[in-house]
Length: 429
Image (tube, rainbow, N blue to C red):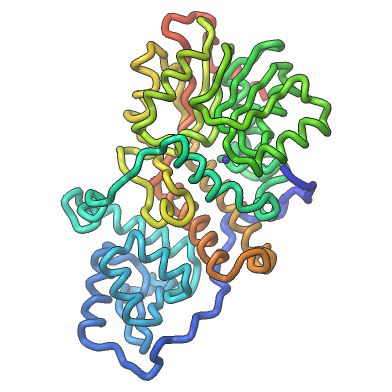
């Protein structure tokens, strides 16, 4: 999901930074109207639906419900009746919608509030419950080539200057790897690229194909440091313009080619297939197509790595995230990922879950995003600021609580014996 102008390393950032909301509540629709008995009933029901998290929920007239034992540091405030009823009817979608529009706001730490809600909902969630039934009735459209281009444009082509405000200098928009507790974000992103390279045991002169290359940093890093030739595919025009300019400035155009095309359009034969942060956008229904591409392009001794957000069980990404932030996104479970490897005789060699590394990565991003709030609002508007704050904060909470995982899966042709004997090579760096 990835480089920009140089900025100072974030060596003084504290990962447990308090993400307190900064926006002022919008005007109440009817400030003199007291909440009725039905409103209070709905608010209490909503708190129970959430699993009675250690927070307080409040109405526009000050009436509130919630935890009474002193653990409720955070408070969720509804500003009008329609916002309350919308969230009660469809919380997965409308919580984000109402927060974005400023019709509900959070007093206290946004990440901590979401963590408490996720934790309590995990205790009471039922596959036959209301939220599960809502999910079953949703219609999901497969990511055709045309739809995939539109989805990527929606998220990645909103402007390189926006992403430059809160990503690291390499503009890597995927999980970093923190070899030590106090590694800063810039160093951790470089460590991630080396961690991937070591897992692929690259050799100088080999040909690598990258599916979904972001702003081009991984391809450049592999070519420059490990002496390989890389063809990198991406359908985000904004990202590719940036990546090609970087390659030109670095004098690496003879080693790295950035191709504006979908993963389904990959051509040629390669020693290595790598994909970091693209699988989430493919959709489980298209895994057989991806499997065919890998089988077609890998040499007989070929191997590869897929780095992807995932889940413990099959399921769907939050409805609001899919609607407003990542249309078409679908993080897989490991059983679903196996559909890529099993049909084509590909052997899984290594699986690593670096979930907490992504929580820490996102926490850094959220800190930088909050510091750049005025610049973001000047580029877009207050609703956009709130939407992306909620997306980043919700992602921190989801990875901390285990609602989302981060898998790195290494694979090779079945029967290939040209593989490392131990994992020692992973930790030499």
